[in-house]
Length: 102
Image 1 (cartoon, rainbow, N blue to C red):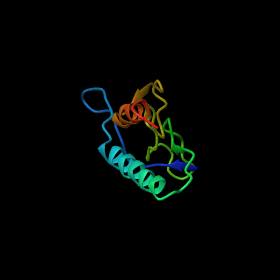
Image 2: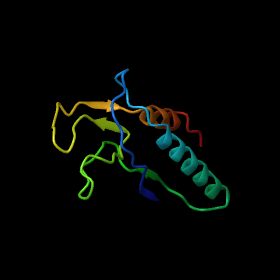
Image 3: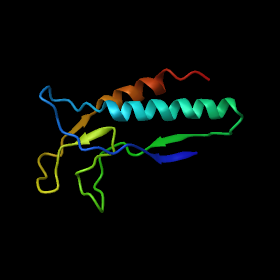
Image 4: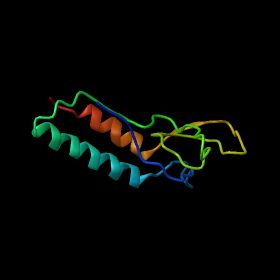
């Protein structure tokens, strides 16, 4: 089982109100492809859990680096409203899960 596998980046809400994270999508695609290759090679892979669903507070970087599929609108100094905004990677991963065929 692959757990806590993720991409961190400095991210902001863009002018359109969304959070665009193409690097995370690329990272997810590459890891999903790698897991598919491993399965074809006979690896008994039972699950994958990206790190993390929501942006989380890091003990070393606060909210500067973000890991989640969902942006939490706050910073190291401002709590703001803590609004949750699904990132592009959220929609990518949601579609990937929904389209899975065994």
